[in-house]
Length: 195
Image (tube, rainbow, N blue to C red; front, side):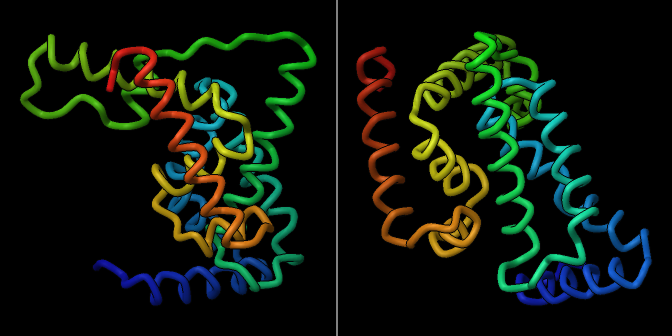
């Protein structure tokens, strides 16, 4: 049975209430619903499979511990994305301080984004993987405040209002950052002779 968006949001709030009343299986359902999406956001922000897995796990640990503090003014997934964004930002800051340079795994990126299409030839798969890796590297070069907005809009298909809620900034700021991110990406891809 496919739930409509409004029904799913209501069901999420019901699950939160059940969690608050001690039903751990309700939280398991929240994790099941959003674990892949949270991982994908973390991966796109961090560009590293292991860090993305760590952040995704930490998101749900923080959410579970903070479920009583969830006010319900935002949607459940917006709340989870907000946690993921903050944790990814902290991880990036810490890795820059330590001077770590994490490479991007083509296999992890292709697996995370489903780049291997049914019926693709090996050369088409290789080209798709190569282009996806290049795009990921260009996304990683974006300043963090542009990258987060771009990832949430492009890969998670969140609305401007949902992104604004997740990031705690005005809708106009989201639109401006998204436009700037697209402009920077387009210029970078043109410089690399991809566009």
